Length: 137
Image (cartoon, rainbow, N blue to C red; front, side):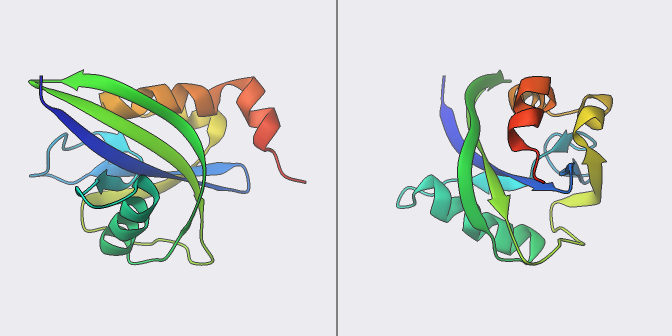
């Protein structure tokens, strides 16, 4: 099965995480996801993620630690999704690929209808052990 390597940004701020809803006309329209995109052949995952967020959300980021990397079958493709914690001095307000951006408390992430590739990262972020590890004073 063909495999696509994709990266996604997990913005974590004051106990909340940014979720983005896919716009109509896009693949997985109406589903929630972490923003990001495909890795080009000559890119590292971190470089690709910074480029995708600049293109999609119009902001610059610093890529921090890996949250999860999972391969998920979607139709006739395997989506190899690596989700990274990111930080930015800027707050995203709009997206070229999403019709809604929403900051949610970590314990509310599971209330949204997530795209299948993002579900493993949502489960990790929602786990009490992970939340206590990432809480900042």
